[in-house]
Length: 140
Image (cartoon, rainbow, N blue to C red; front, side, top):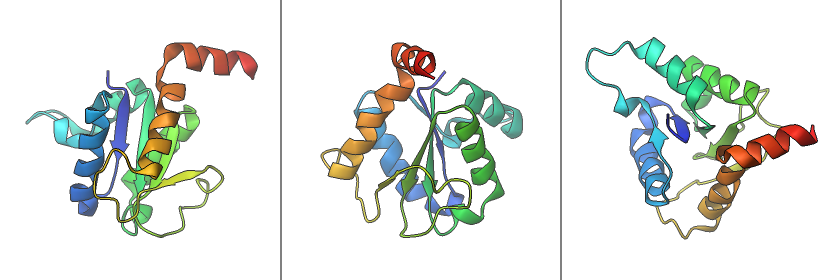
């Protein structure tokens, strides 16, 4: 089970790679569809990883806002209270996802010291740590 599931549009692959690499450098385990094995059932593997991930990071771009796959994956993260939105283009997120704050990694080139990336990293332990999730649930 990965700490983080990354959802992105195929056209954003180079930027998704930057984010996956930086998150891995910070010690998080990351699943994204590039990890699927040849012959593995795409739909069932994605569904399994979405259910198991402790955090779903959605990379919102001009192309991903039009992707039904990305919107479905974002909805799964939202329903499981583990969605983190990241803007990689200066766009408006789809209806239903605008209420939460999004990290702004527009024009980001992969520096882990970047202020917005650090804000993203400060949010992750609150979602990924089992103790933090149990404490959050008890406050509801």
